[in-house]
Amino acid sequence: MTMPETARQPDLVHAPSENGSTSLHRLLPTDFANVQGRESYWWTLVRESILRSHPPIEDPKQHHWLVVSALAALLAGYLTAWIGTDRGKVLVVGTTLFTEEPLTRTRNLLVYSMWGPEKAGSRKAWDRFIAQLVQYAGDMGAANVIGYIDETNAPALALARRAGGDLVHRLAKFPTRPPEAKP
Image 1 (cartoon, helix red, strand yellow):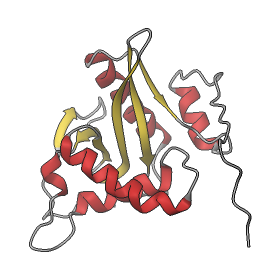
Image 2 (tube, rainbow, N blue to C red):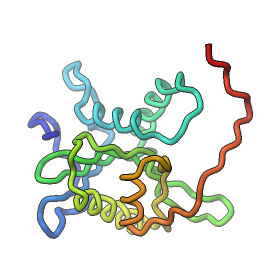
Image 3 (cartoon, one colour):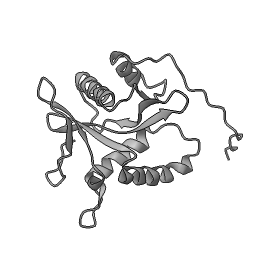
Image 4 (spheres, rainbow, N blue to C red):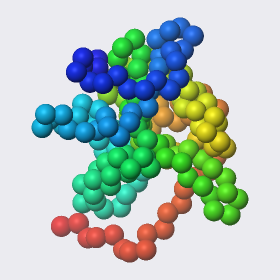
């Protein structure tokens, strides 16, 4: 997906990689504003990233509120949106937020969503995007980059392994309400 000329070039967080083609960009809250009554190009991509790769939520009816809450968090600066480009094409769209474990006060960067609008994106480009995000997190004082990965998502698991991710821990969840009966 090539960036339209009318879209503001987002802030460059990490300069193009050694091969000169892969860049990680941070979007600003103003990038999500409607322009002349039209939805922001960047918001369209970020919303899609959130809907396709958000952490697990129990009730599919909550997807609308998830999007509304995410937009509010982006505008407030609590949630940060990113795009990764390679040779002028948007290959990665994601959102992150900093969290702190309350007992140890360990600061982490949580990858809330990450999605690729292009079916084909080189594995090396994705690896560079992750490396740049990890470097950014470290520069901002985070001890780790963390995120949810569905155990059936083989490409995401392979990416995490290549980046040196620890995939030993699993999140256990225990529903507090019985599931609704299906009609």
